[in-house]
Image (cartoon, rainbow, N blue to C red; front, side):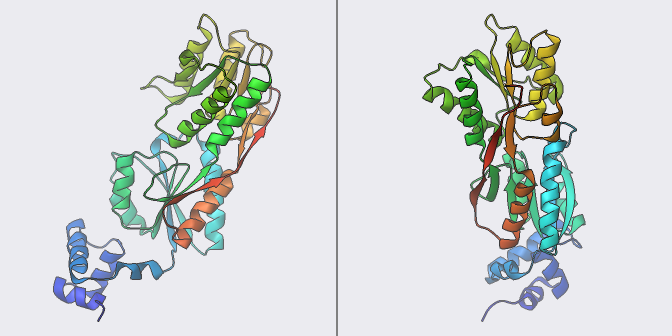
Length: 322
């Protein structure tokens, strides 16, 4: 005979409602009580798969605090809109939470009484493991881990297409400008960049692979990294920036230095945010269907997808900057 919630309540000496809230990780008790009830359920052989049959009605859209900036906003706002559209289709509600490693994350989740987590952008592995302890369905968007279902742009192909375009345009000293290689998406874009150089038999100059210095904001870091590139004895003739915000900073620094774009130096970004087409000159970039990332993330949650990666195609968009 299968173990019921009533059986667990009897052994734990609590009400059926308390057991139900503990198993669903809902608020209304201390964390010690929750853990004790879940341990009793496990020892009795309770089938936790029963919880998987209940529909997901409340989803938390989690964004790392480092992404909650004006430069990151154009990308992640579009992902959020896509997630909202999918929630309306699935009759689910969406809560937005900006979180960081030092935040009381579990307490925040309890207050919102969510059924599932949509983690968007970079998260430290330690923070992902903490979130996993909530015991709720969880999907990553614009990030990867072998433990979860993930949705990502085809970052490597995008990086490859950018670099191949620049090579075919006659550029040979192509720099890769990044904020940090800790982010999965940036590493994949760099991988595509290196693959295109390798196929073209162009030696990758380590001096052209530049990461922003730590301890400063993104805009300052990108400006310093770009100035470092322009100060080289033999400066680059092209810049592949890890995203459009960085590419627009690179464009400004080049123009302030008296360089013409693309005459002296070509610049290409990634993501195709709205400002990319409005810059002077308009920015070449890689178009990412950002809303689709959000929609697919929610759909995978509703479907309770197993761990694995879904890749969303990208498209090279050529404008006057290259």
